[in-house]
Image (cartoon, rainbow, N blue to C red; front, side, top):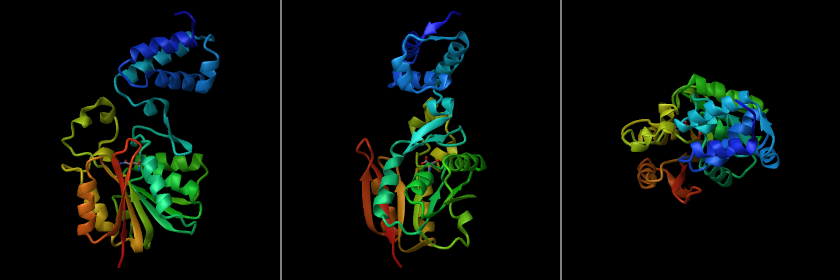
Length: 282
Ligand code: GLN
């Protein structure tokens, strides 16, 4: 194998990944990661010749990507909010739409007071970490059922020098016993119905099933969270949930039935209903 230019590699592998919408961008990300440079460097230096050993690794990674492995798992990181998160197959790849949930929480709870806030099912820690950087005074608890996910979230907190999050392992409210009441409970729980054909997509098959699905209807985790939060919120406390694009009516009905008030719906980057907030008053 002889040396080949950056531009030749980018073109060659973009063609191999042609069924992926952002193929050129993704190949740039892979090559930039391998060379420990940024994408701008590649653009500025298209003629630099690349060693066969790098080409070989790039080739392997492109084939993994072609087989459906998410780019974030291959390079081990994903941009979210204002930072880069470490991600492994133990956690859901954080989605840009989840940044809308963070924005809504910050808008709805603007005070820079030492609010106690919990992120249920934190995964990589995306939501908790974004809130912690924006609201350093908040006392945040992040929970997850998965020990391996919590290790990733803790690593991210460490890398970002974030100290106002405590991490606890356990199912939904289990780790919150004797932790007092919260000003806000937030979650992006597993909400894909078990029969949804999207689950057959190779990239979703590589993400943890328990982060995607909680049961047949896709509402199972919401039901638990909406019921359980009533015992853990302060008066006028905020519940803030990300949900599927077609679940807003069902969630609205669930929240109403359980006595929540002041519901607000928000849309994601693709203009789909994606986030609901509601207050619990006693
Ligand atoms: N809270 C994490 C995120 O939004 C994980 C969510 C999940 O695993 N369902 O990325």
